[in-house]
Structure formats: C-alpha cells, structure tokens
Length: 193
Length: 231
Image (cartoon, rainbow over all chains, first blue to last red; front, side, top):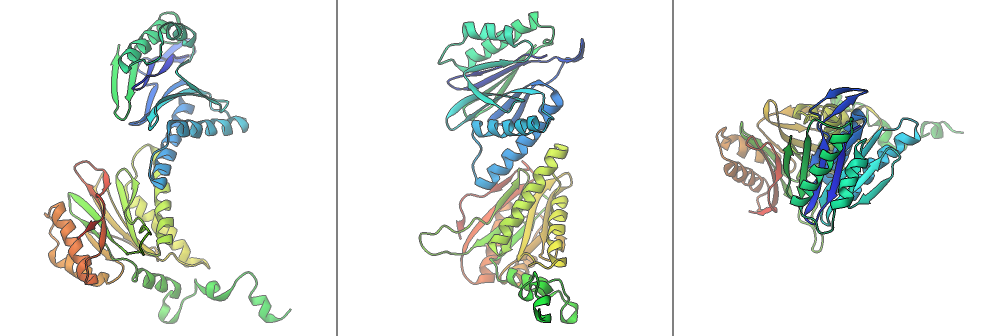
C-alpha cells in the first residue's frame, strides 16, 4: 500500500507521501507520517512494513550520529543509503528480511540525492522515484512532467500532483498529502490536506 | 617442566597481580592509574543551575604536529573531557558515545547524564577486578536532562561523583582551591570560563592553551567553543 515520491532538484530534494496506513481492506490510520526526518539534511520516505522501516531508521540515525562524532563530519547521502542497504541485506541473507521500500533523500556537499533502497539490499540513484502500491500511477505523472533543472517549488507541485493522482485510483493510498523539502543546507516542511 | 614455567603460563610480569590488594588494603594498579591521571593535563568542570562548562589544558606538542582534541561531543545534549593517557580517554569517550546511541535506538529519547556516568563507572570497574591494566583516565561528563544541568566525574576505580565543580589532572588540588573560593551559583558563562582559566593558570603557573565546551539550559545543546583560547 502507500504512495511515496522523491524528486531531485537543482536546489535540493523533495519528498511526498500519502497518509494512509492499511490493515488489509481496513484503513488502519489516516494520519500516518511516512516521511521520517533523520536530521536537517536527510529524510526517508517509507513504503512497506512500518515497524521494519521505523527500526531501520532508528538504527541508521544512531549509526550516522556515531560516525559523525567519530570522524568529525557527517555522512554523505550515499553513505547513509548504503548503511541502510547493508542492514536490509543482512536481514535478507538471514531469512528475516525487512519488508520495506525506502526513498532515502538528502543533501550533502554535492547537492541533492535520491536513493531507492529495498529489502534486497540494493540501492539505485534516481532523479525521481516512487514506491508503494500507488507508484505506477504516480510514475505516470512524474514521467510526463519531470524535467531537468527543476526548482524545489516546481518539484513540490509535481510531488503533490503525483501523490494526489495515485490517491484518486489506488485504494491503498489516501487521506491527505505530506511534502518535505530539503533545500541545500536548510530544511522546510510544508503539507496539504 | 619446572615449577617456575608453570606459574608463568599465559601471563607475564606483574600483570597477573593487578587485581591483588597491596599494602594497607590498596589496589596498587588502581592507585597507579590515579597517579597517572594526576600527571595528565589540568581539566576543569564547573556547573551552575543554568549551564555547565568543561575545559582542559592542551599540552603543547612540537611544531608541525596538531595537539589532540580534548573536548568531545557525546550526543546533542552531552559533552565530555578527560585527563590521563589520551589513548585511554579516547577509548572511554567512544564507549560513552556508543552507550548514548544504544539508548536512543532502544527508547528514542536522549539518555540521562547519570546513566552515562553509571555506565562508564561500571565499565571502568571491570578493569579493577580482572588481571588487566586499569584505564589511566578520569572523565568529566556535562550535559542536560530532565533533571536539569548535570556534571559528573568518574575515576579509574569506577568511583563517580556528581557535583558543581571538579578539577582533575596535574596540580588539580590548586585549581580546585581557586574554584572553591570563587564559585558562585549565579555566575555567568563568561565568568565561569574566566574562573576555570584562572584556576588552570594558577595550577600550572603559566598561560597554556585551553579548550572549552559548554552546555546551557537555554538550548540544551552541547557546543565546543570556538578554537582554543590563548588566554
């Protein structure tokens, strides 16, 4: 279930999500936060088993802080994504996989980055990406309107449109949209019902 | 095989006896560790209800060598410093950092300062009961939690103290005397830094490089103060 989208821009990254948590054919929650802020420069959008994702993010947060303290400067977005992917991979190889599809989005010295990480432990870098049951519909919007040199403001609009479109036709997605913008160096949040 | 070779199996030198009591019921190795700490750089912690500072003398190295870091961030709300062998200090700092992060993974809350002090105390204590070298480092931990600003000193024996002012390292008795005379609960951050600088200078009878860290009630974030002050 779920629809999440991530867009890389020329000013940072943008994440979007719906707010529905499904329990089979029942709507378990209408106000779920599927975008987890790790810190001011990194956020993760969650699709899949919420408990697994929460755990991975908690561990990633701690490991990120530890390594930053130890070496004196923060992890890049790729390092953070690989860290999470390694946890996912060790889960897979011990026959207790984490049932997640994550969009890891953040900014570092080299600008904005979006990585898609899943339970297989693979990560792929993307200009824009979507995950969850509504993703085929969201991708329809993203593919038709995404362009290079996109601004955060434009990306916010597109992310909202993509999630809104998915919510119209995917029963696993709905109940409002959250958008998080991470500009290079500063973080702002915005949301729309 | 002679008797002699039998007693030496797996051990060498005095190491084997590190956990034995010495004359007068003292733990000789622990006493030696404390002695080593007393030769370390002069290090101060001062706490008021509104903030705490920790500062440490940075020993001069030769040209072309950067002196080692002495003020350490443990987590957003905690900082620490220490005196003694720098290798031992670094090891202990990492142990404290790890414990702080384990707490946030388990509970998603910042760890309280007393828990950190107790953890590192029991960590140090294990070195006093097994046949190993006790850590030659005393640690000062300053931070903010639900009960306000906290300051702790932890010694190589595992003994820990909670208080408003501590001095460890070289000539720490002199430094402590200065602080005890001039400590005021309502002093400002600047006054506290001045007091700690004075105490270190008095103890060493010179003006050394000093690194300082600050945690205040206002934002609850531990900060290393800009570049060591040449006072």
